[in-house]
Image 1: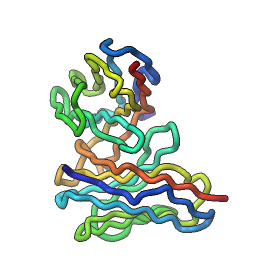
Image 2: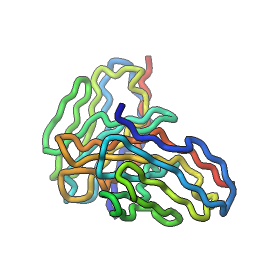
Image 3: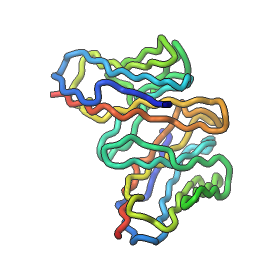
Image 4: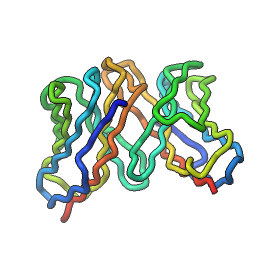
Length: 115
Length: 114
């Protein structure tokens, strides 16, 4: 059973702080990794994708991937109250970089940013 | 506007009464999937389709059927719904072309089976 684990939450940070979200996965052949944000009552929306080891930055968001250790993380700098949501880690376990016919999601972690 | 639509958005039904949740996308995507989301269990894939007439089971396919007769549509069928199928359901689509493999999610269908 391919598993994606996210650190238990909820996570609460003050406004302006860095929020660090972590995710580990069990299937070594996984090639594509994604972070989705889901506001309460809404559908998930993609905020970051990463395919190679290292860091990928997009605005206040940085995704970090370490395939040898099988973990992927998301850093949110200068956290804002509008970042308060559930963050889902997703892994493409099809074994190749490509479309996500077989995505496995973590259970998600709820982030709360205190004004 | 690129989008995935689902209907109905909310549905309350009784045990055993067959129902269909429709899903349609206008992005010419090859891949489509159905997920259910339950508290404490996260998003779990029910079925997915890689193209017309090509479908495969996800992690929790029991009690569900799908069909992909047209590229844009991927309906989810519950032949005999049971209360344990009460959940929030999402349809999603994605393409293998280009540099992004983002899955676009529909707005969700909240199903209650009594």
